[in-house]
Image (cartoon, one colour):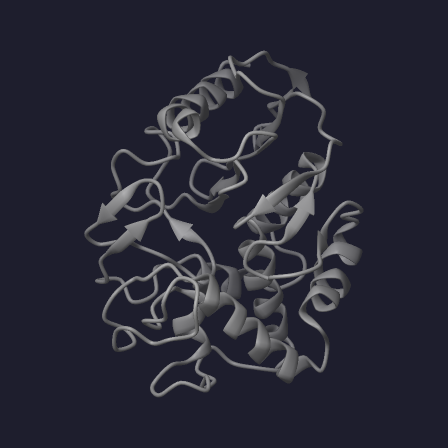
Length: 268
């Protein structure tokens, strides 16, 4: 990877690459950082693996009236952010919910007979060789990993080996496409597209991804100051981890930083 110097006022690591063979790196790619909500990508992908093995379906009913696994993983269940209380009818509002992801993980544990952190380890970390990844707590936000492992996972999200491409396409297509909602830290979007565990850029403006990335770009960011995104149209992907929790610097600079990353790779 080609080293790059970006103007970041704290310790951070960045890895990015594209299908044309260009790549770049900044910081220590083997320093482990908290993932916060980027953990949700691993939980959702482990659900897709369970689906691919016939252990559960997206239409599986959750223990809440009218709610399915699909609702929970796409933040369409109406469940509150931090407690397992349904505040809106399912399928009527995109309410970002840690509790919803945790409820989905409970469903996965029942379906697979395996604790969710161990399921993620067995089905994702071990097959992909992700030596730093741990999820020892909430499956919504407790993960740790380094950038080398995250870029390997981003590559899996580009060219899947653990599930088939059709299932990944389904997961990265907008579910309940007309729902409005809030992206924490970035405000209200009408609509607010989301897939199975992944935020989808769509037509969002003033977003954390690069302005020149396509509307098909998907991924997640975390309150620890972390992100992972994949643009399936351009064949580009990037990850970011740092010591500074999400705040004004990230909100004001991530979009421009991602644009700088793309320009650096495209100029190689």
